[in-house]
Length: 193
Image (cartoon, rainbow, N blue to C red; front, side, top):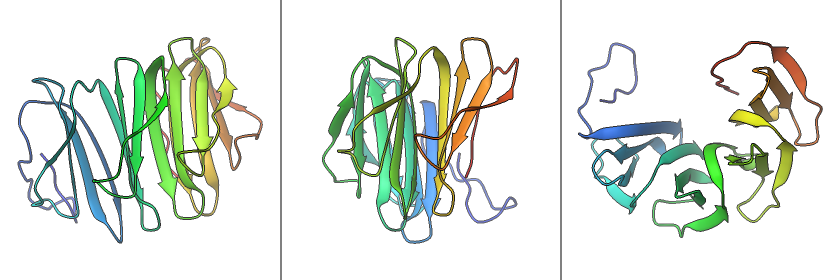
């Protein structure tokens, strides 16, 4: 179920048998809605309006993440069988294989800094890249349990991890910035820019 425009807007039934969702929006491209169905792990995506037709993107998907900005368009990431696939610019763009041995994914995007793609590997490595799909991966931290990212044109990337000691570590503005220990005994992390 999705609504747009106001907290008192009417709910729209979008899709049934859903096991995961991700949403994003920008002023040029409108809402970006992605869902993984429970039967067959099909990744379905729509953009532009709540009444737009769904596009089938991939099969066998375990996890998904989306972002969007008016300069670069939609950024869609899918994770399945340990592989991270990403596309940017349109729903018809080609999928790029980004990384293997992946457990968790997160994406963000802004018009100035471009895509911010993060993956947590099965070895606990927090891997991040910024600027384009062809940028090099940076190992930001070892021993991570969770990863989250956000980005905005003024402040740039915001990266958060939950380390093996349940500490929330956060860095901002650059992939080379120092980590700040924000809080201990953390269970779940989420970021916004």
